[in-house]
Amino acid sequence: MTERTLVLIKPDAIRRRLTGEILRRIEAKGYDIIALDMRRPTRGTLERHYESHRGKEYFPALIAFMLSGPSIAAVVEGDRVIEGIRSLAGTTDPTTASPGTIRGDLARQWDTPVFQTLIHSSDAPLSAHYEIGVWFPDLQSSM
Image 1 (cartoon, rainbow, N blue to C red):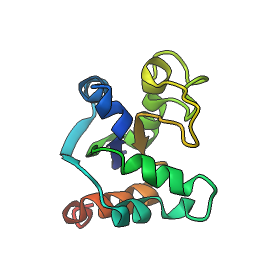
Image 2 (cartoon, rainbow, N blue to C red; image 1 turned 180 degrees about the vertical axis):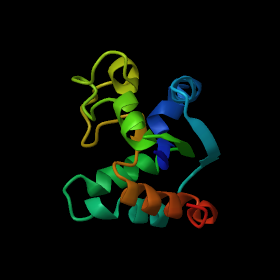
Image 3 (cartoon, rainbow, N blue to C red; image 1 turned 90 degrees about the vertical axis):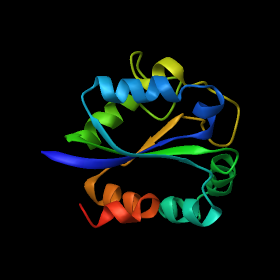
């Protein structure tokens, strides 16, 4: 089943110049990048994006981290792309992420309140629809 997902390449990946490698892995897997934009998101955009985390202890640190530099937002399309990108990214904890995944190969474990995990991807069709609407409102209507 063809679907779309939102992928964010986070500030830590951009600082470490890993954008090309992450996008290469996504394309090598056979997925299509249908929208791509580098931007410095506003606090409002990030608070809408991470709404489900509001009230959690790490929420302020997560927002601060995401405001620390530019991010690349992408809409990626393909067969079972939500499941596929999450598998490609690896588990959130970079120390235990499997070798061969983006986080397993490239992410670092830092002593910070928020793991610097290089990449975000939507976890379900409903969240993908919502997140694409936050970052690419013009595309949401074509879903």
